[in-house]
Image (cartoon, rainbow, N blue to C red; front, top):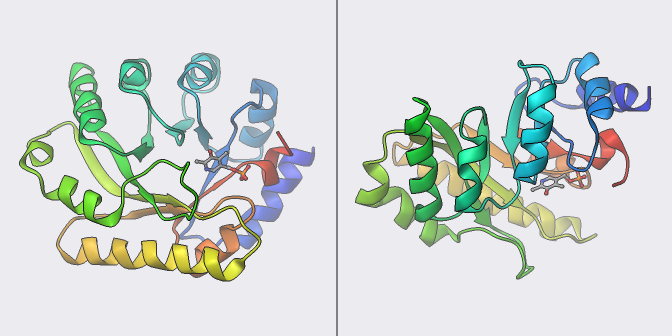
Length: 216
Ligand SMILES: *Cc1c(COP(=O)(O)O)cnc(C)c1O
């Protein structure tokens, strides 16, 4: 029952306005069902193949969130069911999501992944690239995707001040975009190691894996 206990503890710590995405990458269907029985319905996966395998057999009221880097050629596999794509970082990817969403007569909600960390390796747009994308004609004409928010990952460090300043910068950018009449409502920031700081800095969606399911 460790998974259920971990979840219950988290539920008591997270304010009601913050949505918990349970990151179930590399965890099996039995483990996911333990979280499901404890009441969790939103799960995050990094890999398309893993997500489609799990979606095929697990209950249909699960919301599947794609949180890892998404390649254009894989979009077609998740387009029928994906609930939210957290990791959009190019117009080309959005155009592909739009095309596939249209085939399934859906509008797929997406977040722009913003690069806020010091590390070079993490994916994402910088603030000016995100502005450019949001204001481009090519984006505005897409009818089957909707950008509903932003996602960011802080530097993997023990320096809480650095983490806090990165989350704060993303929240400021989020507010700035909203003030220009973009109807954003998801700010996806915070993982097992830094979700408390993220919530203090205005996150309303956290992606927590190892704290629920144990180390991978
Ligand atoms: C793996 C992952 C998480 C969860 O990480 P934990 O440290 O296990 O909570 C969150 N977001 C993304 C993008 C991830 O790849």
